Length: 456
Image (tube, rainbow, N blue to C red):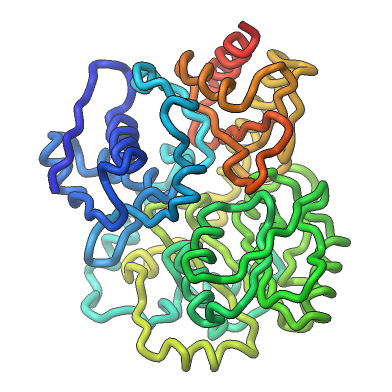
């Protein structure tokens, strides 16, 4: 496939121009579901840029769920159900003005991270040494044992998750983990889903024709379901998108409900590495003594989205039956990436990198909060700011969500809708601002522009 991508002479980085134009092709359905993208090398040659430039663009598209990678096959446009395509990709006239797309230079995208702080030198040394070893055989379907051993140690020390190596499954993202579970539990299973919640997870459950029951989110996180269910999907460490941290009392109540109804809770512990206030609250899994929690973790936010390495920890009672069900299953995660991650953790780079990034992201978060209060004062309420790489603002000016986004685009700043994570649109104007991929100057400039645009 040949992609037509044009570079302008603006100061916008080339990888951003590649990312934005491919995303636009997907949004407009000129690139349809399942379309294969050019390889990184092919596109780099076509555009006369470095492979690294294309790789960063593909990483960002992957992180946002627009494309997915398949081992030894390449990158493909990810599937989206029509109902979510409409919500995730609003019509152009609603929030996007075509003639200002090229002027976006500050993007508060929650999927972006600080790539420039990744220890590429240490990573390259590890991968180079590993490539000298025998790489001809495929990983076991559960994943490389060395990586599972490192994860087993890490989740116990950091999140209190006690498990064996045999309970851990290496996957290539949350959607892959959910697909495995959906096929295993089958279409007759019912699943409780946070309202609002992570739309791409909802899309997977819907794709497998699960009976989805919306469970309201209140100030404490996911409410206790009022009916028996097979599964419950929740994000207690940093509820997506609203950002609240579920208190321990609610966690115990959910576990009690699961025990009484013989349900399993899927605990998506994304963003748990980045908590900025107080001590970390124990994971649901660490409080579970009845084997009712299926635990999800990922390296995407803390390392690189392009690694596409996540992990799932099953209750011990499910392991044998799950393995029998997937007797013919093959690993979908790059072996070199698994071994590199394992060695990265073993050599201490992981802990060192996490500590560095927590300090960096806390500083960015503090600057964002300071600027919001300084420039908007009582006109804004900040929500979900104590963890993760994004926060929500409740804008109290007389302006709609669509208008707020549109005005931001007109002044070169991109912010994100919260309403499309709801089935019933919220009454208030809620906006999502990610800060992981922005520097201090961009955050300050971006909020200043938005404040001026919203007051006009």
